[in-house]
Amino acid sequence: MSKALIKFIRLSPTKARLIAREVQGMNAELAMASLKFMPNKGAKYIANAISSAVANGGFEANEVVVKSCRVDAGAVLKRFRPRARGSASRIRKPTSHIMVEVAKLEVKNEEKKAPAKIAKKTTSTKKATAKKES
Image (tube, rainbow, N blue to C red):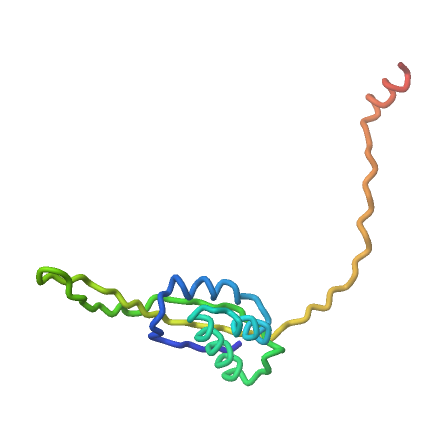
C-alpha cells in the first residue's frame, strides 16, 4: 500500500469530495482515464495524486486499486473586496488537502462449494397422525 498527499490546493473541499467519491474502489488506470474526461478542476489534482501514489509504491497503474481518496479542508485565505460607501465584504478562498491510498489488487481464489441441501418440511408426529385419521 502506498500513499500520496497533495496539500494547499486552491479548491473547495466540498467540490473535490464529489470527485473523490467517484474514484474510490476503482482500478487506478481506469480511475485516471475517467478523471481525464471530467470537466471539474479537482479531477486534474486527484488524477495527479493517484499517479503519484502509484509511482510511490513502484507499481503499475493496472495492478492497483484506489483504496481510499480523502479530501480534507485546508487553511481558508481571507481577502476583502471594496464595496459601496467605504465598506468592504469578505471573500473566502478555501484550500484542500487530497490524500490517496492505493493497494495492490488481490485476487481471491474462491473454491466452489457444493450447493446446500434443501431441508424437508417436517411436522410433529401428533399433528401428522391426527390429520391422517380425519
